[in-house]
Length: 456
Image 1 (cartoon, rainbow, N blue to C red):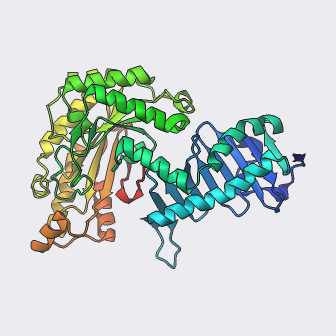
Image 2 (spheres, rainbow, N blue to C red):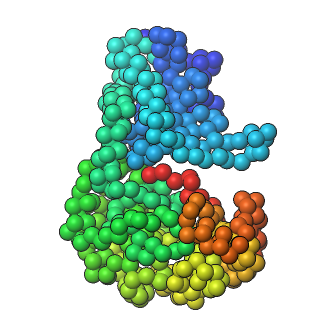
Image 3 (cartoon, one colour):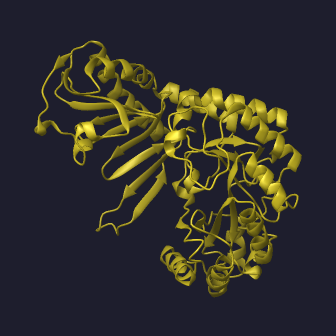
């Protein structure tokens, strides 16, 4: 390998903001000039391998060598373990602005993996052949090469056939992962249940025709072992554990306690404290996670006391997410959701009294113009009455109307006019404007929860 000297004219896109030695996330890196004249920066961090090319193309792989993202400045393609690829593209002003998201067809997902493979293999071959000109190295040429080559070798084996085989292995363990809260997208999902125990909400098609199943603690332990073996070194990039699927916390309390004990046998979970777990405690470790999260339907399963939630908290439960959808009881009935605003408030209070972080999800556009005024008023009223604070989450999720769904049939039959995307944004803003937060507890995190932005 020929060692050159640093030159400002050789800077790639990744160096525009920080000089090479100041990029903290990568522990080892090599910038090389390939024999064909193309520069590439290959970097290894605690949780991924990345290759940055001179044309501003970036390829990202997990530490098992699976392609996870292909990015350029104006768009990126995120590949999930299921081999589903989500494209996020920033529209130009002429196109109306904003963000466009779509899922690639299967053949395009294959082509994405093939194209990345064709870029990685020559880099590996030239590095192994010592024929490239080395321009920068961190920490030093020999050490950087020794650390990077094993991960690069795994990435170079990830071709179309490997991607499909890996996805089959994923589906054998998980079936599928329908959705996660936005702050849990990089969680390690472990399924205590599959599907949804209720699955009758008028607006939801995520679990329609999906068999609902509950694992025993023994079967759950097997599932955890299978998931650990599948994720392998890539566990280093997972922050938390998400107990799936739609409403795992409605299982019998004794079963949940047994499952949490299984987690303690396999992983390290921090004790409950008032202070946030620092990222350097879990990042880069295959067994450390900052806690367990889960969905909860306030109207499903056994009614838990604060003491029950406290026991789960001591076993590692940290965050619970509730789809409140709306504070309007009439709209809840219309949506076929057997909850009430009073019941939701009581559930959230129990969770907060137990010292848990809570995320609540409001459904934008629910009930169309017919319910719009009451939906805004009552949803803001309900959220304002919840004891939420600075660590909690309030998500606004735009309604996705599926063709030929029960929601579509009912709104058509009743001649209910749906809200446009612009009207849903206005509805979100109206709810936000009406929110009032306790100064001592602090302001919760507010954000969007778009189902189209998820691919696990």
